[in-house]
Length: 230
Length: 118
Image 1: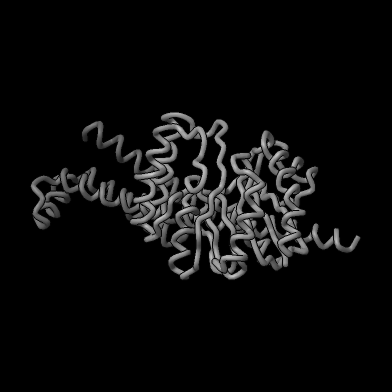
Image 2: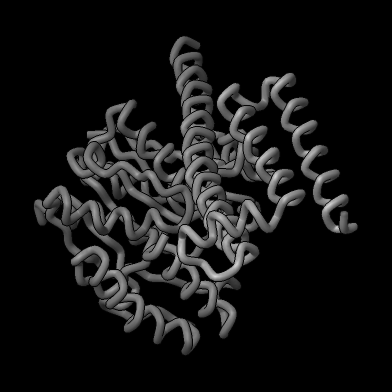
């Protein structure tokens, strides 16, 4: 079996090295799950800093967008690469260091043992996320959930989470056409459209600087409006 | 002739000149050039004979004043053009993304092949 971990990155020199090392440390656990090949792919979305060099130094496969096209576009490029090289399982993992690489192996194992086709990370299951600002918490847990439910018909505990695991069928069916942040709602809508079976899985999310305070809440709210009404 | 009429006619003539230049440069299709030529010429006609022309159409359409009709029509046209531009820019965006992806994947896959051959 072949596992591909897709990390979309735009100007992420600060965290990317640590993220890549963290992911490579999981390889032995993933091998135990039966994966003969594990490929970590960093999709450098036209960064203006040393993001690509760092990823290369850490030993990741680097796919470089000549122009910045947005996170959705970078993820779809990673997905397409995974399809071409014949991935059996694909993982979406953010480059900003908010996720714990230690969550990858258990989530992949959950996909394999549960027979579900998609595993979605949730920061509210299990141990709740730390340091989530009040405004953001309210938006994420109430308004956003309803928005997403009304738009996609899927009820999730965490509607906006970049941690995802797909099996081969899900990977081949879900095609992202929204370049920006709207890709998240697109993925959730695709679950229902293609009748893909899915489950949420608790993942740890640690906040650094993005999304603190009222401004962060406003940003999320704006993303939501953008996702739902464009 | 009022000053505003002279200024508007001069501006519309300049617009016709620009449309012609863009057509020669190949930025404008032949139908597009004809559209803008007719559009700006109509503008000149309305500016020179505002009352007979606009009043005629305004009466027929049930709008009180000729000037109001011009504003309504201009607004409708503007919004339509903005809509067209938005659609086009969205399509362009998608095409740029597709091109970016094709280039990025081709490079990555080529490098992968080279690594295998080494």
